[in-house]
Length: 337
Length: 217
Image (cartoon, rainbow over all chains, first blue to last red; front, top):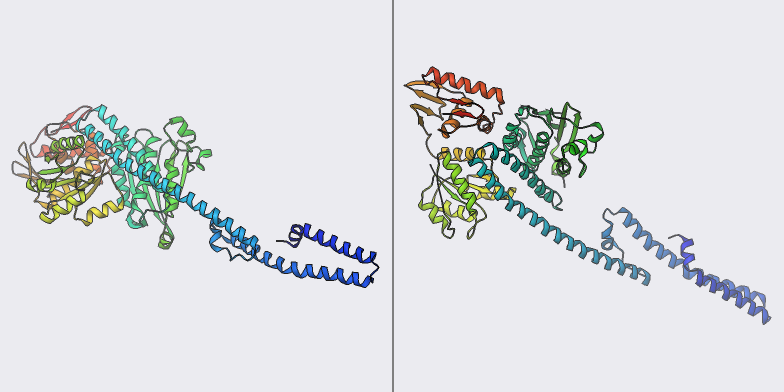
C-alpha cells in the first residue's frame, strides 16, 4: 500500500480536517484573538492527525504487504486463508472473513466436483470391465468358428478393445492420485508381451518383427508402459501397408536408456510432427485415413510425463516413423514425490 | 485333461468350453454358484479357470476355499487388470492371472504351462508317430529324430487340432507366443524342414498343404 493510496482513501477526512483548521483560524481572526494562538491550534491539529494516521498506515501497510508477499510466493493461491495473519483492524477482519467464506465455498465446490469425477471414473472403470466380457465372448466365438469372416470381425474387435483400453487409461490418467507402481522391468519381456497381444493383427498385416538390445532393466510402471507401447504398435498398424517391418531396439547411454520403436510406414509430414502429442490432433494422416482420434499419442505423452519418461517422435514421410521412449537411469528421478 | 470353468456369463462359458474342447481338453462348469467350491472339488479337475466377479462368493473367496483342500492349478481370469488384482490373486494362492479379453493363444499357453508343471510330460501318438514335446523328439518305426523348438511348436499345434486345417496365420501366432516372431518366409522354411524330417522317417505326406487355407495333419 503506497502512502498516496492511503491518503487518497482518507481524502474526505483530510478535507474536513483542513476545512476545520481554516474555519478555526478564520474564526480566531474574526474574534481578534492573538494570531499565535491560531498558529498553535492549527499546528496542534495537524500534529494530532499525523500522530493518528502514521501508525494506522504502518499497520495496514504491514498487513497488506504481508498478504501480498504470501500470495505471490504461493503455488496454489487458493489456500491463502490458511496463511493469513491474525486480523487487527475491523477492515482486516472483514477481508479475513471474506477470504474465509470464499475459501470454504471453493472447497465445497471442489469436493463436489471431486466426488462427481470419482463417481464418473468409477463408472468408466466398471463399464470398461463389463464391456470386456462381451468383447472376450465375441473373440472366442470368432475363434471357435474360424473363417475369413470371423477373422475380419476379430480384427475389428481388436480395434474396439484398443479404444476401450484408451478410455481406461484416459480415466486413470486424469486421476488426481497417481495409481501407478514403479517396478523393475525387463524391457524385452514387456515388449514381447505387447507384440504377443497384437500378434493377430500384426500377422494379418504380414509384419516383420525385429528385436535388438532390449535386455535391460528400467524402473517404471509395467501396465502403463505396456499401454504406451500398445498405442505405438497400434499406430504403426494403422499407418503401414502390408508387409511392413517393425523394429524395437534399445540404446543404453550414460544417464538414460532409450527404447526405439520404428516402422517403415507412411511417416508423418514435417509440419505435423511437433503437434502429434497434442490432444485431438489428427494431422494429414488422420484426415486421410479417417480413423484417427488424436487420443493415442496424447495419452502416451500424458502417461510418460507422469512416469517421468520422455517420449519423442521422428519421421520421414514415406520412409519411417520412430518413437523413442527415454528412461532416466537415475532412479531418484522416478521415485521422487 | 479336465478343466473346470467358473464363469457366470453363460455364453462366454459355452464358447470357452467349445474352444478348449477343440484343443483336446475336457471341460466342466456349473450354472449354480452357491456351493461352487464343493462342486469344483467333487469333479477333481486338473485345472480351474476362475472368474472374479461372480454371484455369491467372489472368485478370490472361492480360490481361498479351494486352496484349503487342494493344490489344483488355478488361473484367475478377470477383466480387472490393476496391479492390486494381480497381487491379490497371487497372494491367495492362484497360479496365474489372465485378463479378459484373452488372446486365446496366450490362454492356451498358460493352461499348458500350468498343467505341465503339475503332471508328467504328455506323449502324443498320432498315425503311428510318437511325439515327446518335453524332449522335443519324434519316434516313428522306432527311429528317433530331434526337432528344433520351432518345428516342435508347429507339429504340436498341427497335432492338437488334428483333422482340421490350421491356417498359416494361426501357426505363426502359435510360434509368436513362444517369443519366436517369425515372418512368412521363415514359417515356410520351418514347415519344409519339418516335412523333410518326417519324410526321412518314412512319413510321406504327413502334413498336407491346403492351398490358400493352411496345413492339415
